[in-house]
Image (cartoon, rainbow, N blue to C red; front, top):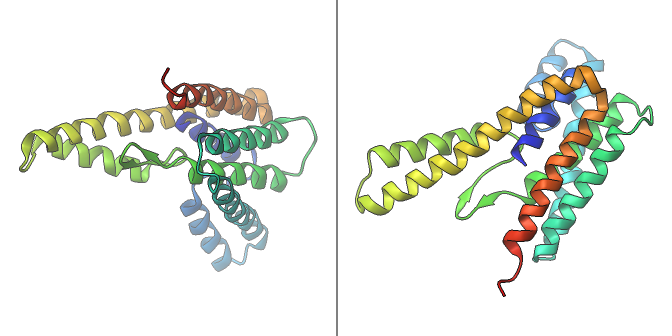
Length: 208
């Protein structure tokens, strides 16, 4: 799932006016710069994903009210449908594509945010990187109880490190796909999400 997040940001940035689909911090900074520069065309480019992000978070909260394994699968299905439309040859305006991708990214952020007892994010890496090196510090310099702290640090370093590397791999894949496949690159994100959905189904299936 982190790989899909990296791919989405790379593709949207390269193909749709240098805006972010996932990283709202970047959009807020660029929006502020555009406002100060009186570049109102750029202002609208960054307002669109911010507004779509709010809608996506709201949709994610609505889906999660089911409090069941089906809620996660439903969130994935909605996200995959949105990306399938974004990648289709419908000649949608760039703002519509960016808004659709930002909405689906916000849905993913809202629905998938904990790995065991550790908070994580599949669509940007700042918090994940902090957790990686928190874990590394606890692994190398544990306090009492040393065994438990070292074990927890090792797990955080490993799990969050894999997520960060997955995001990086997805961004590299998106940068390679965007000039070759255009918006159809979003379909590759759908394949990644499908794989994640199959893993989620297995992990949540009842034990016989």
